Length: 449
Ligand code: MG
Image (cartoon, rainbow, N blue to C red; front, side, top):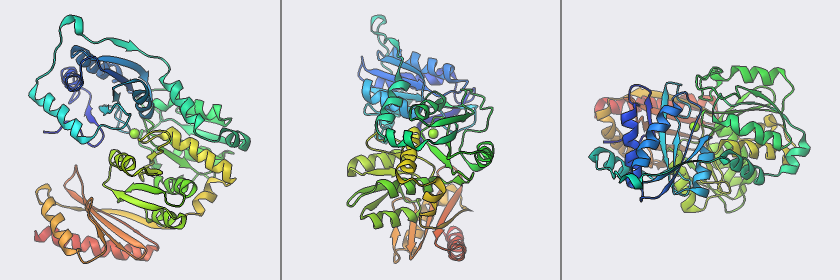
């Protein structure tokens, strides 16, 4: 049985997430850790934050580990504080999910997301109910710590070219989605000498501004704001601010893989490695080649990208959803670091955001889905691997077939009874052609197996 999904344990308040369940999660994590460990714990701005957090803390303390409670903080700030001051970390967040959700995310002592193997050990303890309940005098201490957000703000400012950003005289609009970055990103901007106009930057767990997933339909307000106003950039975070999305000075929504490509274009040097999931744009490959750098592909999932980056000592990594990982900061997605780096790039190159986008290779992308019963998924995957074995394929996550200036990735959904086809090509005609071909072939395979 599994407890942890791809991004921690998620649930709806009053349904999966009730106090008894949460106390047991706290006890399972505490039992997994040596007695006396210090667990750094922070939360996003959700209304349920206090309920969830107090239940988890109670469970942790009962097993004889201490809790260092840093209050409301973005997930990357919790990760940085864990690395600097803790033996383990817990983030109470459901990232971009609707307000009725919350989540518990486990963080290793080095600030990275917990490897799956460690999650399995915690799950084993949870389901066996063999918790280490300590004697009264060994119960852990609940310590409230100030300054985690400050430490995070200062660390980011120290890693970018502050003078260049200050001298550029930028004016930006930022939308914190009423989430945890309300306490960090506007201050980082201000301290970098940027003029800031803020939207939805008061913490509010009802998310009155918009849903916290940073996709175009949720961001019409900041988009029209930037379009009509005199801004150099629009900046948006998701609820726990491990991601950042940009709006250019004309009010265009810039997709995450474009910002990833802009950063790659700026920082990659000869011999560098860039790590990204198989679903990322070919533009990254073109840029890396031009710079004498190399792309390493992984399965989809930020923790997997981060682990591969540590292993290969990569220079940069990230995903198409606005998650960027900078090793000089830490090995996890970091929304505010991505924001500060983008300002540095604009300042140092003297280029507007739209100009940086215009320099990128142009590709067209589309995603479609084909229904497939869950029990057939594995057989379909095997059949696809056989069918395309003669072509240029990568099979680390689904089947990715690569051609000249195009690729197709066919991958089973982890949650729904469907297969997804991701495709990218240099022209819209080619995109339509490959999508039609592979959709038809996938349907045939699903029927046949
Ligand atoms: Mg997030």
